[in-house]
Length: 636
Image (cartoon, rainbow, N blue to C red; front, side):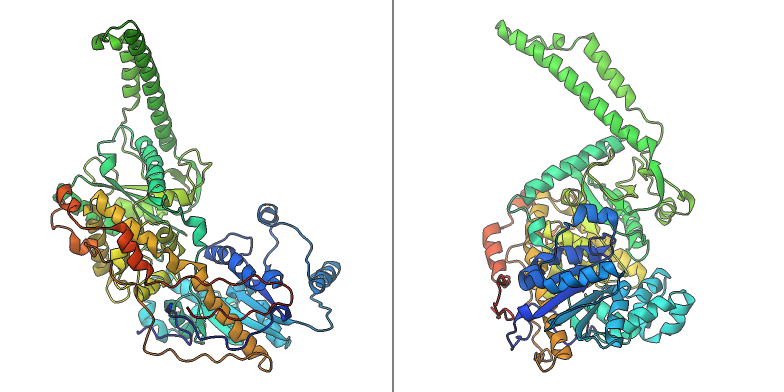
């Protein structure tokens, strides 16, 4: 099925101009979602990171509406009195009479109400049913029925046109919610979704083609580390290595300097998120590394929350043993240093045989004895409540990756979100991502994909698929994604086994890279962060609001978008330096020499300057002052 474009293009060549300037003092924007100041999933990130840019555009006429969660209000919301007199009267009226909406205004402003997902969709339906003078926008970030169908292991994308949507929703007992989502999509003045792949899904399941595709962005400043991101990677990697030393105590028979850290993170949807194909690829990668006698070791982290009752005792013991070994080494080091210092003070060279006495050797022997282990390093860091039926653990039992000495691929399942206060792995998610070498997200159902996007802005290469919004977006805008550390796995036109082989090939090629090649690739990946900045992608939300105003108030606003032409905007070219991509640059044997890599011509500044030519400068929305008229930013 071809990827048909929606009315607005999703290339960075720009949208059609908003011909009419309008006074935003006469317009108010409400954005309504269940995840406003309520972290549940990716929509929370969308709203939180986009808020600053929207505030620059709308100023005090921008309002977010969400559920009142006491715990979230205490930590994320600052209670203030609204400046707008009309809004203040409305809130007072609502407080005095429950949640009944009542606005009092002699000259009501033009209102834009943007609803996210079916949970907020009822408000949109009631606005249209009561014929309120409100311009409405509905954004689906993932269709409800699509998520349920994919979780049921159906051939979703090849059978999109064949589903009896009413029957499928009824069979899954979500018909009432499906009807609410479909009604919101059909009633809205403007219907949007986050990617072209989701636009196709929405057209078949919700029976309306989205008017505009609004890709998800990030506040890149939050993740950017100027020119220090390589140093931050080294610092974070060192902390992960410390955890690994404890986790594999007694079986640390591999070189950490030749160890590559992979990870997958997100909701625990075993098939939708691609954990199944990732595990199968790891088993095949393990075989390839062993038969090629590779010195590289892979440690794959699975960060997916599941039901647990506590930390695994053996895992906690590993970190305690590591700390004990460190303390012992520090004690012996201090004693050794003191003796060396006293020997030098009297002008004598130290007698090495007398620098360590019997007590020192006893301490070290006890420490070594404490590292003896009768069992293999644990797979799971926690005690699982449903160990026997857990999909990841059952798959690991089937493929036989038990962290044995013969395995070149090790697996660590961390069934809890990362936190800097954890006694086990005290790292925030952002810090952990920076310390890894590659993010692997072979999702079957991923309307956008914030995890690979976050990897990109932090300069960490990632594997995505052509069934994810992020993967399709990168394929559209980059001529050779793999050259920039964005590997796109084909899960749309290949069978599961073929896709698994392709993923194994990606992983094996990545393992063969030298340290210098990985540094070059991280530099290229980080340069793509501008593509994901809200300063670019926010313009699609701007266009959606303009279109909604024009449809709701045609006498006041005009918007005449045109069909996209054959030109699809620029594509990031292949990097100017050699190698163009790891697949083409590496030798067939994993034992290539470092000397050969050093001869590869590479000028970071020159390559970065050439890349900057291919990306437009972010537009800046002027600050709104009273009685100031603002139009759509002009094309560069």
